[in-house]
Image (cartoon, rainbow, N blue to C red; front, side, top):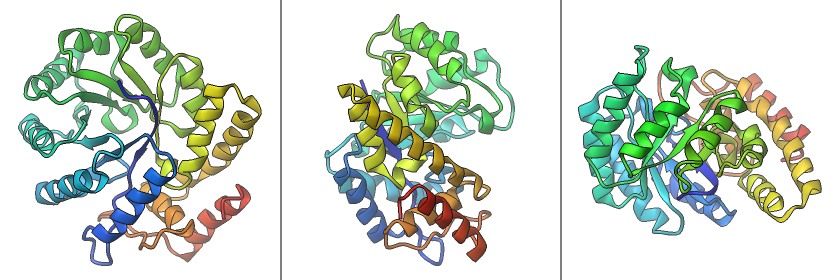
Length: 297
């Protein structure tokens, strides 16, 4: 259903920590104009975990209106309260989003029965397409291909998965186990450097943070792969490998990614939601050096 290079959009903030809607508009246009196939708002890179329900709703409405059908709009609606997830997903549907991206509940490690019940409750509450978000490093549970297949077969509006697992074998198993049974199910890698392995295994693309910094690089790689231009694939992959160090420049990685976006030309403050903090000058120089080494700035 979905295919290509999708971006989990950073949420640009002002000095007080409020959403900078002017900055968001500029960044949205930048991503679309540079070829991004779809946008995810309120994902991990968008700091969904730090916003109030009111803030989320304002951003959802703004994002859908601003994108204005130019590319698909996905909204992160997952959380730890089923009732809140259902409520936000239904709001997202009414506003006109193209899909909801639903991370599994975190804190407790849930078994397959509880995970099934969670996704079943969300899927049954809406006609909106649902994208499963598997991020075991953050949720303490890795959603198995067998469970995904069961959910996809039982709920036709579960149409894709973002597999943020630092092991391409898991994504490959999803592709082989789920896509072989449900042809139009989409499997995206959540790790930037796994775009090519994802495609080689029969997957559909990537939904990753560095697209905020160099959207044109990922789009060029994807098109080159589709066209058999493997020289461009290799050079693009090498540059992505160099840029991956940005993720290690701050904890959480959002601060470093926002700094990288600013350094590549967006008019913004690299402010992050508390309890996160902006990078100091030493941190900014570290990010700048990575961008310089990759010949991005």
